[in-house]
Length: 40
Image (cartoon, rainbow, N blue to C red; front, side, top):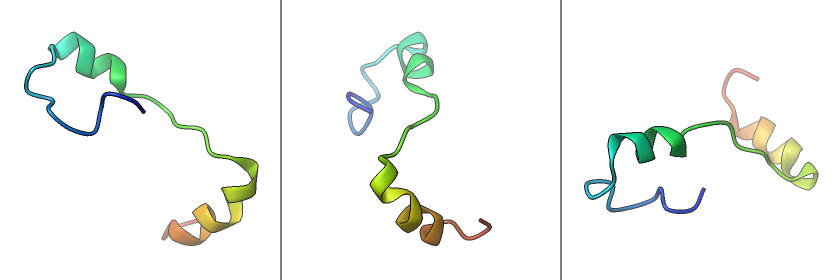
């Protein structure tokens, strides 16, 4: 998650592509995340 929030103009396409991907959430946050998802 680091380095992705702002100033993406200076980063190369390769670098931005490698910043994509899946994210993990803490087990304690699972229920609240499910509530936020509209189609879960």
